[in-house]
Length: 380
Image (cartoon, rainbow, N blue to C red; front, side):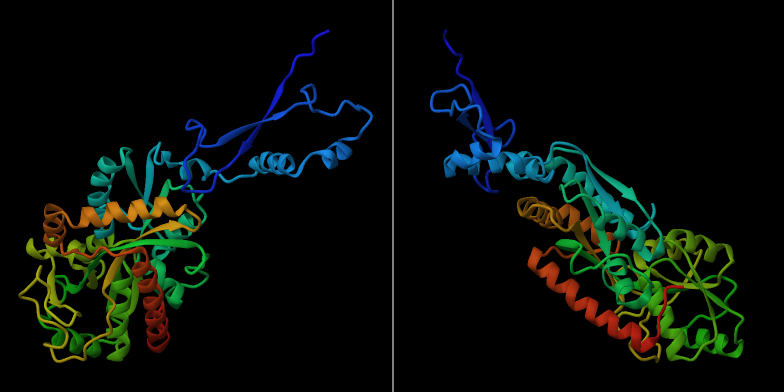
């Protein structure tokens, strides 16, 4: 009687960067003889362990590879070059209307075109960006979740501004590109009669405990905290999840002052709803050229607490995906129309290599940790 010869299909995963034979699965397939094939042992009395001992080393390696496949990470498909094949999530750590949300949406649209899949902005404000940053750290490293991280979540909070940060910035993330920078401005509403920084400081000092200040981001916390501590002022801090709702309450008179990023603040200043007192940067801001610096107002130059954004991924995303994202983001930032649109909003485009982004994050973490400790700053 003829015996049907069968084959057993063994799956071998290639290393990243090598061309797959079976493009549908992104894997190679090699056939090994089954039990009824010529060359297979006919002694059915042998145990499975005995059979394995009789198998040649090459076949044992194939069988081991097949067993290991069941535990292979989900990123194997991404490594095969078919990324992206579904929508990408871009987490924003601040709410709609914030400078971060604005920048995220300005990146998402052109990224959607060049990647061929929708890039969906997902705002997750809260806890001085620790909420969104921690969420990203726990996301699968499959190339479908990214974070437009800020200095708040990557250096200020881990540096001591926020307690109990649930992630390690040196182990839980891959840094893709430094995207942009932004400066800040000190604002007051109509309930404050002061027109200059000197008048404002004198007013607060003459009324200890009377005034409060709002914050909607790390720069606001740090710059107002510096002014509060360096001038020995007695004020209370009211923290908000992001700048827009904080500005709403300052305009409404619930809180009399705050330091805000220029992108969010400038429209309110231009509309006459708020008054700009001074900018803490070393130079006047192009968005508000009429507003003097702290130094021009007769005060010491504060430390550099200006904001920045970095495109970040959970640790473990395949290198080719990180490289592709870096290439596309840097190219987008270099488009003349994109640079012009960003600068008009007070956002200074940067663009960097992955190595430069990683180095910058580490350097900034050291700077913020030291400054937060020296000034005794806290988020709330």
